[in-house]
Image (cartoon, rainbow, N blue to C red):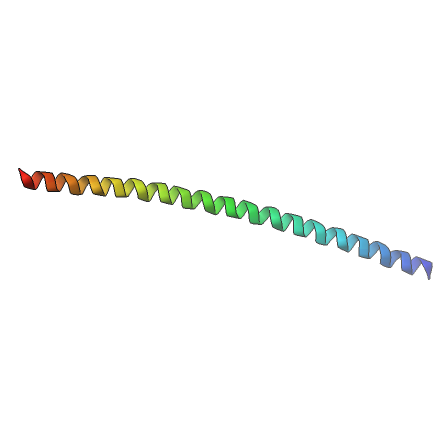
Length: 68
């Protein structure tokens, strides 16, 4: 009887450790995913800002050439 109780206790302890490890790894993965997405979105934002600036410059050049 004591052996069964000890086995159950050890199994419960091990399962608690596994759950704790899984939660920790899940949090790390969420953080890494959020950082990755933020980097991708920043790059897209930078690229779009550069493209918008080029578009505005092209429009200004067209308007300036029409005034001549």
